[in-house]
Image (cartoon, rainbow, N blue to C red; front, side):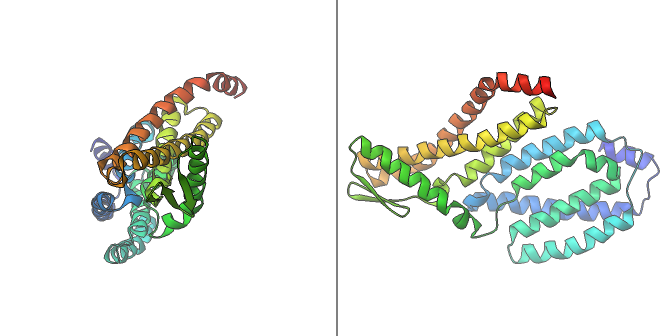
Length: 288
């Protein structure tokens, strides 16, 4: 609100107000549909967390870089908002949540451009790009992207447990645990938690070490490995629960509890990783 008052006080073109209001309406429409979608679809489970972090980053950086003394061209913003409005309406009607998200994101950029100008939006590149992490992948993409990951996790889980004498075998992504069959689904592949942990790691490194982009990239890449390790442990845990307590126990609330617990462990691993990388970080800072 304070930034809007500054923008008005600067004598900006009042014709841009309807554009801002229109853009804000369908940005809000997308956010509501995204939050509803995240409760129904595993592919979007990470979206509320990333959306909250991204919004906080955007508001924080906006206050730092926006002077309120300049504004963008309403005509240029309108050239973006009109086609995006059409795309957004069609995408919402067809339930194409990802396409609706990109149209809402572009409208956010257009509204910000009208309010603060191109120079300010360029300085907001990180929070704006970070918000893209909140967009769920297109339907069907998760199955394709996670196929190799699921095969990798299930194969090495079977190999490890076989060393300890457990009666386990694998056929594709189906695990045979004693007399039970266990399917390694997309939720166990780690794609969603990988996106979440990568986004959280990127946020942590940017806020704490934003001046060192090299360390931020290194830390983010290592967080992908942490996410993979956490989901490997999740598959192992579910196999052990199935073997010792039965299939019903593995498919109960324990299944989700295992994911939440290992996510928390991975977050703890993030802080431990940061401490272990202290010598590397110091060398990077000295050479910067």
